[in-house]
Image 1 (tube, rainbow over the protein chains, first blue to last red):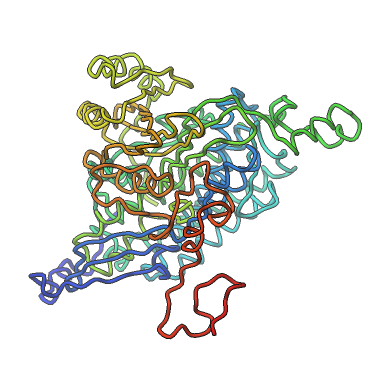
Image 2 (image 1 turned 135 degrees about the vertical axis):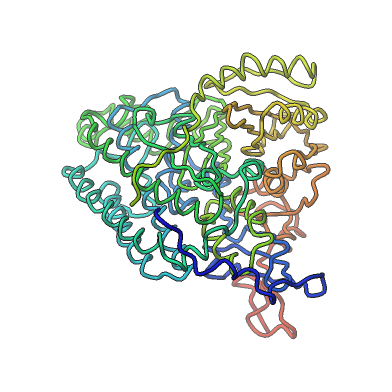
Length: 409
Length: 205
């Protein structure tokens, strides 16, 4: 960025904002139904004048017992509820879960399925960051960015509908591969969509990068140090904004990410503006990964060759008794997974999402513990809010990108 | 958009770091604490140790001093009908070394209590509250051990294996079923339709 434009750095030193003593301390409850809380977060604030002294996030308003429900579904059925945790990035959730189960089963998916998974997960990252960008800009007061961002995201949801039949909760990744092969002509559709991305991102950044209101509201607001962020368990773009280049895709490569060439955007100050910069640059890195995935997408099967885990193709079921039995067994009972525990970490758009899956050797998961990155990021908010102005709370909540389906599970 | 940026090199080499934890850190930990720490096999190259509840605090301190600066997760598992019934699982991470270590702390049903580590890693504060909420495992010394996902006056701990999926009225004692009804705030004089009782019981007269 060429220059920083601010309307003046005297704003925060106004006399009326400097209130001493505890006499004027009051408690303010924000949320759970408040447009700036991005879902159903309640924050209990103690404020002195305009200054936040203490912030306490309260969560649980969207608790749907997904971990409990998953224990009562078969390994394949559980994919459908795991979709619904992080509703802005269901592909990342599914990928983490199926990778964990595949580790327990000791199977490796064919190359085509692996590359398609990377392609769709990175498209999902772009979509998630676009929602974040649009809603954050809306909170800060720029309504047109919401339209630009959601228009682009719409293209990604159309692509998801094309492969999986659903726009939001695709349940497209299955244990052992994909639900079905990508449709004919899908690669060209993705290419046509990707052609729109750089231009649109240039437009969005032209609106925001040198916008004095945007800079005033974000620069130097809600800063957190790297040590504090690590101690609070912050991961993902929020941690990288503090200058810590930790990305699970590079540190513990999964799903073949080590074959791809991409950078990990990192900023320095850990404030709201750096979180913005890291995310918009991650969109372009995901764009690079998508291009590479398209270029190296091989042919071949998209599921493992194991009829005990993957449904046989439908035409075969009509002709072969054996295939029919496999079909019936898989649909009614599912498959057994060897007993054991596994932890699968994954870089979701919000940070390190971890699946600690425990199997007792039966056809249902004994326990699916999900380490939601947004859960820990939400509880790092007080460290960013304390000392900030009340109006900055909106910017801080928005910039942390909490998704309450995942926080409350 | 701005020109090419130069980012610091991202942390890499997780596999080698896990091998280092398995070959160097776990043996040193076992040597330092003797019976309190029991090495376990490392499935999928994920190092893990079993830690006795009374040794958890010193073990955690020892590990933190040697670089494990992030507590990635605290989770509970209910292994009913095994004894000890519960297990609290801690995932630790060291940045930038990329060491990972899993601590598995067995917890007896009769005395479900482990010491807190929230004074070492503040990330444990909400995570331990969640384990208390959903499993009923207490964390001794925790500054604010209250429910976090369920309502404050909820009875029972939903992620226990003997807690019915369909809700508390399916199997809990009568007083619990009564209290776990939908809690709408009661307005003075109980105007019609605001009794907070579920559908069929909504009298309001």
